[in-house]
Length: 238
Image (cartoon, rainbow, N blue to C red; front, side, top):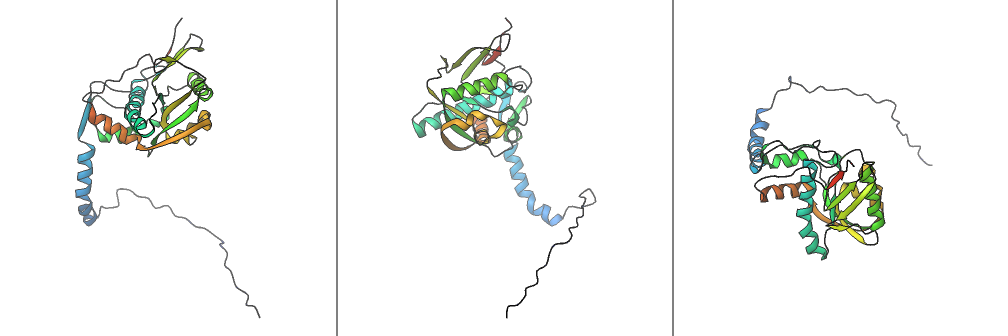
């Protein structure tokens, strides 16, 4: 004779908001235990790595900005030798998303804490191989974007009406019949920002290199951050 098993069903869910404010007091024993770790982290994060003679910001140019150019140039410089050593191939250019840069760099001492503020996400650098047709889609996206997405290794020139005037990659005219190797973040490769051209990649090389670590490594190598608005992406007045 089979036994009938009673089953319980959830009939109600209750919740209560617990407000955390100044009425909660710090536990001295926990604060004492954490203090040496906290002090060491602050020491590392606040040690000066470089110097910025002027602020690097995200709104000082219409099509490219000093902060965006710094980020793209860092990725290009730090990724190029790594990609070459692993694959024997040359990195052609870099494209990042404006929304991924979460802070600016003020004039003065530059620290590792600044790198965490600029890039708080655990995003890694990836290098994708794109056919010329996909690069054409990328260029069209950049030309029509309302925000200045950072690029390096590429120059895009638009005419007065916003149509493409010229595109050069590493000093040579864009060739739709070849493939290009593009450094970007794994977030974009995985579909972030709805950049559809990354759906058509031939191959992806995962560098296992955090974008934030590339920033810190670059800060350690240079004495002064000199990024400016330049002609890598411009729209002509004529």
